Length: 508
Image (cartoon, rainbow, N blue to C red; front, side, top):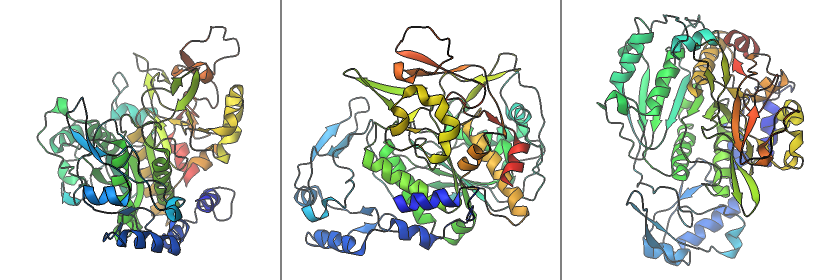
């Protein structure tokens, strides 16, 4: 993985001759594929128990096996029990310990499910199914632009200088929205949204599809006040980029660990198809509540971040929410550790959070609950050290051991960014260019020149270690502290909010 990460930093460094020279499928898999002797030894071990594993990913760096409880207890030298989830009443099977052969121990990162107890139990997986929501055609791109008394698509397009017409033909570049916890979208609600904000664009004109994995049935007919957050996110994305081909990938499991495993494995396997090889250029990961870094085993987080790195290496932009609980910290026995949200803490994702408008719609400020913070697992990428270094220097040694969550792109809603990037990809496609891919290093290299600096408002964080305020701050330490929006880069709003035209110029 260290070699893959080094190569990724090279191909996404705007000053490197190989900039945007995306890796091929074969090149990526060469970095990730386990050594042949390890795979042979692992298969032999399971074959001894009459069990045949299958590849859960194209490279076989994660394997899936099916076995009975009695087989599992024998294979892993453990005892499995049924545990009841007190709030939901559902049950899961887990163990408190397990073992593997000594000659394989150093080559196995984790076994799942085993000793990890999720905040909510899993549902049993099943095969994916695909259904078309509406016929494919090109929508008419006509939007009314109103004021910002209410936060609407028209308001957002005005704030961020987004054109009412993309100005280029729509392409088959695809945006995939990952929705978790069984969330989906409602066709009638999408239709109402488009009728309100896009005159002449009907549901039948949108190129919209649902891919359902792990019992994600996406039932229709739910009333508007029960619509999911994923439904709103898709509508906002289409509000900015109605021309984009959009797929909603929905899962029904209720554990962050299993949700991500299901979704990323599906995407990596999907990468083998010609359709995805050609068009799969943006992944928008809808927020999954409760997935801070302490909620999923470290080995699994690293494995999932490897998945994101593989997607990024192919030219895909992985857009994620940075969380809506502020900068979280965990205080135990007098020690404070940061709890960044995942996958925002993975260095290969583009993490987005939120700002807010004043009551009269005239001023955009930092949002108190916006996510961000520091990862206890992933190191800070080198491209962040310049703009961020002086800001976090009061934290001392933390600067050396933590990765600042990429909270440098805080917008009104994460899906707006996915829509902006989709439109910019269309512009690049019209000039015979590839997708923008991993844009974080380029943004830092240009010191946020394509963004509107947000200098008002605060984000919240816990513990004295999170305190980064103005130099004349004299307030005594408290358990809830303030991270202020300042001129230039800051931990509350990063470089600020996007200006579409400037970002288009930068990314072209």
